Length: 417
Image (tube, rainbow, N blue to C red; front, top):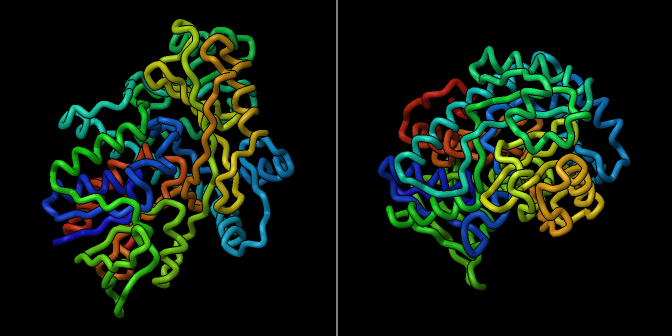
C-alpha cells in the first residue's frame, strides 16, 4: 500500500519513518525545500512529559483577561474578525473546567510517556544524533502563588506515572547550579528526571535522511492546494510545484500540516478545531560554560522553556493568538531576552540572540487529532500545539498501528476508534 504524508515537520517525518518500518510505500510532500523548516525549525527543544497541564484549566480565563493588552504577556489573545479564532476561543473556555482539565492532562501524560519511550527506542536503534541531553527537566517558580498552583497538577502527574517531584530551592540549585544567581528569587521547583531535551530540527532532518535511505520518497517545493474525492474516499492531492499543477495519488493519505491542517481539511468537510499559537524563540551562543545550564528548564510564570543544544542555548515560549502572521513582535522578543539575562546573566551572550517565530497548531484542549477521519483512507496526525516534538514518535507509532488495522499500545482517545 502506498501512503502519502502531507507535511515534513517532526510529526510528518516520524510518521513516514514508522509507516515505512511497518512495510508501506511512503511519499512525503512539503512546500519547503527540506524537512523541518517551519514549526520544527527552532522550537524549545524539550521532550517534556511533565509539561502536560493543559492551557485550558480553571485558572486560565482570569489570567488571559489580566494579560489582555500586555504586548509581552505570556499568552496574548489579539481579537480579530475571524470566526475560526472565536470558535476556538469559545471551545477553549468550555475546556476550562476541573473535570475537562483532569481528563486532558491524563491524555497528555499517557501520550507523552509512550512517545518518550518510542523516541528512546528509535535512538537506540539508529544512533541518531541531535544534541540530546537526558538530564531531566526542572520547572522553577519565582512567584510563590504560581508554585503553589503547580503542586496539584504535579501530584496528578505522579499518579499517572510521570514522576514530577516537588523540590525546594536548595535542591533545585543542586540539580542545576546555573540557577544560583537567582536563588533569592526562587520560590520552589519541580523536577522530572526522565524527561529530555534535544534539537528537533537536527533530529527531523537526520531522520528524513534515514527514511529516504530506507525507501521513503520526499517531494519538496510542493504546495498542497486541495483534494480530489468521491464519497468517503480521497482520490488524490492537488499540488503546485515549480509552476506546474499535478495531482498526486496514493492508496491512503496522512494529514500532518500543523496549523495549516484545519483550512485544508475544511475542503473535505472536516472541521478540525486547530488555531495557530505563534511562539517565539531565541538561540544564543554560550558565554560561560560553568554558568550555562545543562538541565533543561521551564519558567512556568513566564511560559518559557530552556534547552542546552551543544554550544548554543535555546529559550522558547509564549503564545500569541493572532492569526497566521509570522511577523516578529520585537516587544515579545526583548521580553524573553530580558527575563533570561535577569536570571542567568553570565550563561550566554544575550545581546547576540537570534530570534525566530513559528505557528504551533493548538487545539482548545491541547489534545491532538490522531487516527482515522471519516474518510476511509484519510488519517490525521496533527494539532500537537507546543508538544509536537514531545509527542511526535508516539503519535507516529500509534498511527502506524491504526493504519495497519490494530490498536495502539497507549490509552488515548484516538479519532475514529
